[in-house]
Image 1 (cartoon, helix red, strand yellow):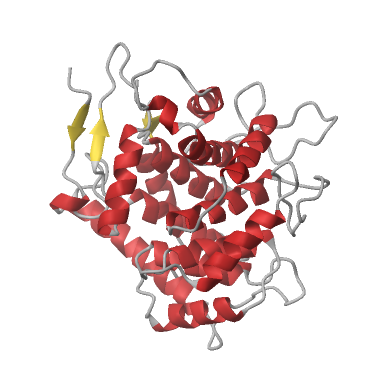
Image 2 (cartoon, helix red, strand yellow; image 1 turned 60 degrees about the horizontal axis):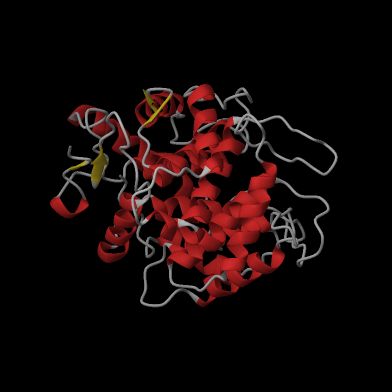
Length: 370
């Protein structure tokens, strides 16, 4: 039985965005391209002459720099050239700004990790070190640095973003001690609920917390990172063993997945949910949740909700637009290879294609999915 079928992919000229029978129709693809182009135009237009986004937080605020960093990250992920005038201004401002909040530093790290060059940007090296030192002793994070002290106040949203920033730096060759990932893994395992999902916070004595979509996707995506760093060698040889935090989290996703809202959270943090969902899809290689094509379904929801100026949502539209653009950008990555599921032990090397996708990404400097 053939367990994998090569798809026409990044190295064979697949048009960006093609995903089987989902959006490969020319007219639909043009609509996606227009949506992405409009979102890029909107975000680029929010970058002021000095390089920071309109409505950026005050310098004394813990979120200072966060909007600009997220905006730059989304633009770079969408393929905007670093020398595009507004993005160039934003990157210059970001590398000179003194950021002190977890979200802001993590998003700056994600942005700088996408800036091509033989060596990682010096500020990325500093941000990776800051993020590692900002964790509490148990691997959790809050809005500001805990300097490896005992965890007091924390939340899993900051914890996800910090881990994402450190992982982005690691992808650029910056060394991250395995102990960092062990602490991260311990934290997320301790937060997983009996239903397989994750919530925003579960402090000592709470016993349990409400699980919902964006936090469960955040937990899953982070556990995939930890698994690949700490445990992938155990799965080089064929094995039927399972990594329970991931399998239980995937079961939660199959049970609660929704395209039109953040599962078990209504419309709250909807575009953040899409961002986290795309991270899980890319990390896991899963095209379906609840037997439904998650990208195709969510794509049409996103396209239908875009405002006329290229933004999404109401009120403070910069973060929501950035998350929506990140979703579209992740989903438009060409499929390198499809793994076929069949009856029996079909997935005895669960991370084989994840490794191949990483190799192609680093070799050809182009993101691919599987």
